[in-house]
Length: 205
Image 1 (cartoon, rainbow, N blue to C red):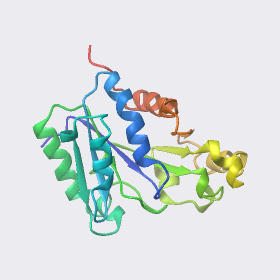
Image 2 (cartoon, one colour):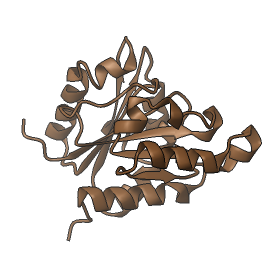
Image 3 (cartoon, one colour):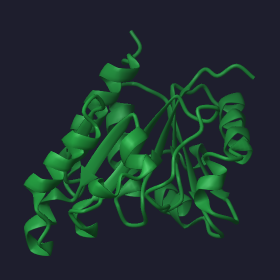
Image 4 (cartoon, one colour):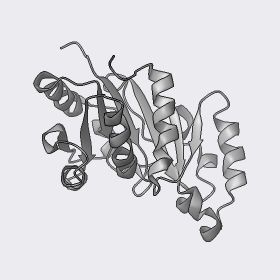
């Protein structure tokens, strides 16, 4: 089928804030008058999908969980067919403007197939250490947007935020990056504003 909705991938290591980013984006997307659905990926559980379904932020019928049963990046890169099928099914059943596709917690080498998504975000966090950008994982290097989350805790885990900023600027000189704290609802506003500008979507007239 021909895609109608913009498909946005959200990847990153376990605990970096991927599901929280989805939860923070949903009210902003819907307040803009956009119709959105969510696909989550996990190895052998539907935990993230169930969390979003129970959160009251979106019609639970618009949230689909995918159990990959293998390395998470397989289902978003090498063989994304199960995610493509889920996205196509959601579009057939609902008028949609956006589909957010969250990867299962993965390593720094994960990336999204362009067959699956139109744009992808990679999330890392300061709690994992200030050397993450210097590891030069594919996610950090190639994502359309890099989100550095949990900047509020950097001083408490001896992470040098200035060093992280400098390293990110060095490895992504021509690609956008945002530094944020997704514990705060306002933390996702810059991400949403960037998506609006980059993908040229807006509220229906």
